[in-house]
Length: 201
Image (tube, rainbow, N blue to C red; front, side):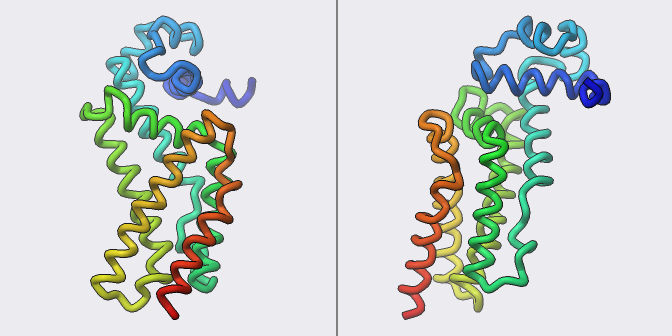
């Protein structure tokens, strides 16, 4: 109760929206249900967010900020050798996603939903995707392109896209099949390690 008392009305509405969207999807969430779940009238929702779509945009923005705060960047492991650095970063990210599966699930659902092309959603989705891609590139570059090189950098870019696709897919598997992100770490690490060994031989 004390923690809830310290939250403002905007945060309480967003908390309720996250729960409802996780249960029903964005289109399945009615403003009337959001009023009931948050304890605030529709006038408060429209005051803070302007529209139902504004709620989604604000929730995406807050999700981005929370993920950015929780996820360790690859640079946090610069004291490790390249492969161990990647393993520490990827394992840490997967543990975080296991604790907060609703984060990536919300982003994936929004990214394939009917509102993905709206200005409100597109801006934040692009920021999140670009930030994730930059982290993957940073994590993979010391392994595959430590000295640069066009071909090596191109490989890193493709592996970064693959990495994002893997975590996107795990968001669906987590929701449908209850597969954890961490359970797939070893297999993906083996793939990266094998590719690195093949290229160095």
